[in-house]
Image 1 (tube, rainbow, N blue to C red):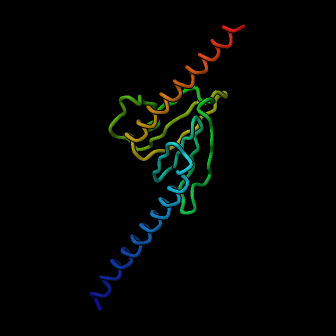
Image 2 (image 1 turned 180 degrees about the horizontal axis):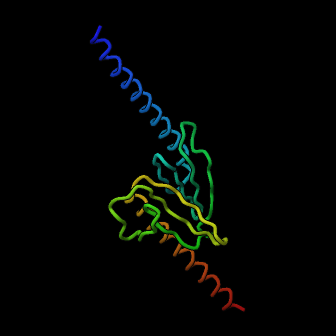
Image 3 (image 1 turned 135 degrees about the vertical axis):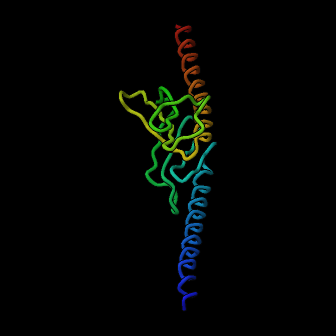
Length: 153
């Protein structure tokens, strides 16, 4: 009887672990189906992020697919920064440790920003560097198009 009472908590833990694993697998499968529509995508337990051309879509992963999805265009973004523990840091030289990690997108609208959470600093830094390069290309293209437009007048 005593051995049975000792094994019962282990059985409960095993059942909980099995359910947790199945739940996470369902989230990954829902993400995989969702991510097919994007050129580039990321998944972690806090958020999913997808990029198609200059449009970014992000949401919270669930077994049914991402919820609370929000979309915005890089054309509406003024700057991108990496935030670690409520401090803006350089994407090129991110810190090795930190808890609250996010990419912060400052929009052209006054006092408007979007923060997308990440679980890992290196992943957030790679996305930040990539999106900053994309943003720089967009700004250069816009400037080039303005020059072309004014040169013809």
